[in-house]
Image 1 (cartoon, rainbow, N blue to C red):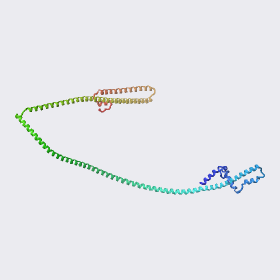
Image 2 (image 1 turned 90 degrees about the vertical axis):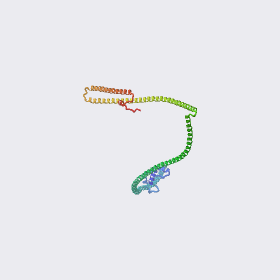
Image 3 (image 1 turned 135 degrees about the vertical axis):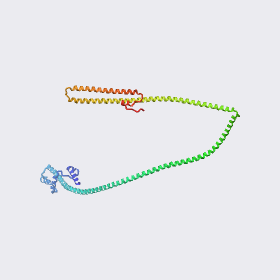
Image 4 (image 1 turned 60 degrees about the horizontal axis):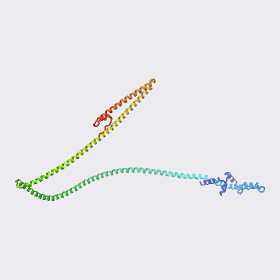
Length: 416
């Protein structure tokens, strides 16, 4: 490849010409091509001078030539010398080219040998890597099967272990729940025990207090009993004296009058207080009755308005539903009429064309008349039924019955 690049560079330098080579300090090259090279190889026998110079020197002697001829001769001699130099250089270059061509001819054989060696090496490496790949693939398949078996074993073991663990967990949860229940029961029992102990202590303290208080109260009651006994004995003695007439009655009369006055004053004050409170309560009751009447009137008005609005809404819904039914009937009748007209037209095509127009006009008029009569009758019947139902509903003072709703086609609403 290096020789081929060198030859390419030499060829590019040859294409520049002799003058460019001379100007750039390069050796002159053969401009005539391969024929000049062949001529240079043939004339390699004259090392000193070329045959052109010998011919010029023999036939054109310098003594017999004029000045112009001498000038031409000198110019031709110089040109021939330059040409001789070109020929030598071309001969050298041809030798180099021959050597390079030989090298280039030998190069493909070397490349072929190298490529053969490379191919053998690549084939060997390919076989080696293919065998290695097959071995690796077999190892991978074996490992995959082993991993699958191992995975199945681990999955089954994991399933069994999870089932065992779940069972253990359930049992432990059950045990823990039982322990918690027992703890709660024990806690309740301990609380009951504590409360019972506290109540026992309180009862013991209360018993001690009651015993001490009973002794004190017994003594106090005994003293009071003795006092009351003395007073009662005095009163009995006074009564005995009164019965016998021994005591003075003026003091007793005064006391009785004083007690009577006190009783009368208390009775009068109590009766006045009761009267005032009774009057206030009556006034308040009257105000509450008035407020209740007003509230009852407003609630009645609101209920009436609500019922009236409900009835209006139901009537509007019934009217819209009736109008939709009328529209549907009208559409059905028009559709029937169109079908009849279509059948008449089909029948007309199969009949004779003599009285065709008269027949169509008569059929159209009769169908329009029938349609108008039926439609008018249906509208009249429907309006009459609606007027009757509306009059019944408006004249009805109580709640609307279910039959009226069915006649009107309105769904019954629950009364709130």
